[in-house]
Image (cartoon, rainbow, N blue to C red):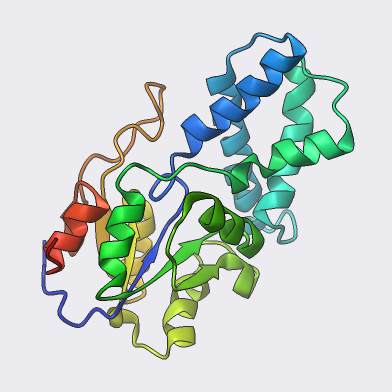
Length: 242
């Protein structure tokens, strides 16, 4: 890997799976609802399918089949489908909305807050997520994530890997693309960012998808600038002691 990162001034992060453990958090929330209602089901499968609905919604936009929608809107559409399929009926609108906001209450990975705080001591740090800004702000408040700035596809009404999503970060920070480092647990995200001139850092999250069929990326793809096992490890590799 090319490891000259001396030009980097800002790190922007994929959030779902990279910064927060969405699968465990969502499974916990829906399991609690099921337990309260006396419904027993495979709640990990529920979490996986709920997340898949978000990905499907973004792909429909990319394919020109639907207009742009926020993550909250896409999550709610899929939730309304999944609840009756898994035997959950009778929730009020307020209860359903509160459940949909489970995506605002995702637990950080154990190293996230400490590692981000270390990185913040040297770099500008911010999100670069397809999640909407309100969701990302609430998640940061919930999990104590010390962002300097929130970037989102919201700002350009699009989703990664659209180049304007990646490049918006450099434009808004008045930086050159190579001065911004995209950080993610997903090689596809990083390779897309790299195509548009951003520096890249891979952080492994091997348990993101549990033990299901989908497997997490375990190491950085060739050409990624930095590969790390945690945000703390990344901070060390970027010259931060502690």
